[in-house]
Image 1 (cartoon, rainbow, N blue to C red):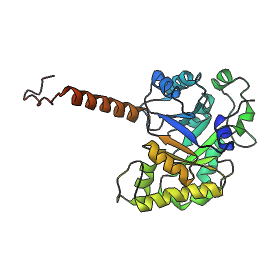
Image 2 (cartoon, rainbow, N blue to C red):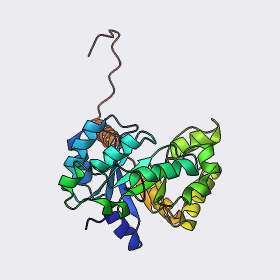
Image 3 (tube, rainbow, N blue to C red):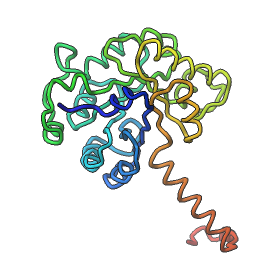
Image 4 (tube, rainbow, N blue to C red):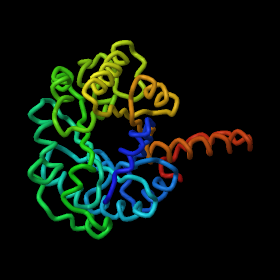
Length: 270
């Protein structure tokens, strides 16, 4: 029977490292999947990609042994079920604001009698021999808490039967709760945001579900694991590419003594 390896890692008392793909390219996804992550999530919500790109990315990652996941654009049954049929073993759903929305989300994840997922795992049945209704027990449903309403209803959302975890995106969580007082971003250090992030982890623990956090650095991710987060995402393909390229350029300029060339007055110069 097909098993979700993330559940096995958690059962062993270990945290999960999740990778993140926002670039709609199969080769990029293949590279990310080969780096040692436990899972890799394709970001269909904010990533520069669509379903066709995501399908090719799942195919490219299939030989790596990682657990394929996706963040869908919205609480939409068509998007959720189609990505599951493509082979996703976990879904992150944005902007869950109430227990009713969490219940709706969970229902789209699972076949009857546990939910209302339609049967037709087109790629999953080929790529994962034996795929069937037993996947109700293996696919993971993560609800994103990002708004003031989501925070207000946090305890009720976390208690939703069938919900496997809560995924925290600190940028939207900050925008949604701080009313413009703080800019969006990862790795929050403000007392009020740290308190909220830690509160989410505690509520997840109390409801025996997994807390997941999107982080900017490994150092902050390690700190979050100490707070009780059981899955952390560290940066993502686009940010990692930009960071590595910038570091390489900076080092080259330092080592060669290259000075910046003043911009030409002629705006047409290249």
